[in-house]
Amino acid sequence: MQLEFTKMQGLGNDFVLVDARSRPFTLGTDAIRRLADRRLGVGCDQVLVIETPSDARAAVRYRVFNADGSGAEHCGNGVRCVARYLLARNELAGGEFQAEINGGLYRLIAGANGIVRVDMGAPRFEPAAIPIAAQTRAARYVLEVAGAWREFGAVSMGNPHAVFLTEDVDVAPVGAVGAPLQSHPFFPQRVNVGFMQIISRDRIRLRVFERGAGETPACGTGACGAVAVGRRWDLLDERVTVELRGGELDIEWSGREGETLWMSGPAVKVFEGSIEL
Image 1 (cartoon, one colour):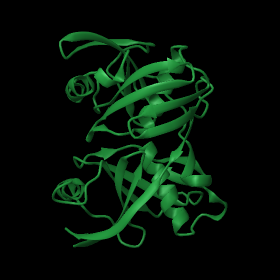
Image 2 (cartoon, rainbow, N blue to C red):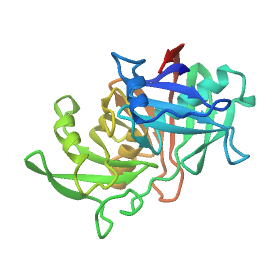
Image 3 (cartoon, rainbow, N blue to C red):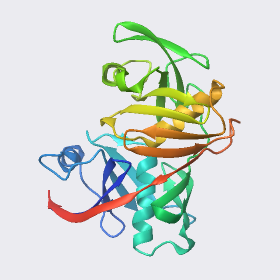
Image 4 (cartoon, helix red, strand yellow):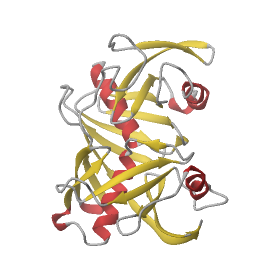
């Protein structure tokens, strides 16, 4: 099978984008893993698939697969790449559209210099919505992991996130904590694990261990989740710059539950190609 693709990246978080609007996407788990393999395939953190939407208000529907072949509900850096892909094909009049993601609609606005602003929906803190195996909602949870009791916040940005505070992200135990949490019963659908260092009320540093991919240079939903938790803990202001190893994202959230959180950041096309699978 010959598969055409576009390689894209947002702050170093890289993707293989497949346009399946004219040809159905039928790759199974093993084929997705090979496509994502950095030695045997194209190489990426996630595979993005765009399809014809079921909702007439949306320009496209998109799905996300992690490098290990598992599905993901959302990807903040990935959805910006979808916007840049459609813009390059002159499919977006005015540079604004809605994308259908996991049954919901998300608004995207393409600006200058490759920056895309995204309505990421409202952060959700209810245990069942994240999901986590907690009986009651709390601002902080505590688990024993990697030989120590650790405190964290939990939130859903369409996918599950656990956020830990750290004094220095450069020495944070990202893999040592992130990897074992993937099989912890507290997270029935696994979890993206962020380590947040607060520089000031309007700036943080962040590293994220993504489920199905491991640590990546940047995680869009992880940045959103970290700011949402930081706002809930009253440590951050309404507008926050998030420094990731791949670059910066700007996050805006009022802190009022039920209100939309906005993310702004770049997305870049790397190359186009095809691969025999």
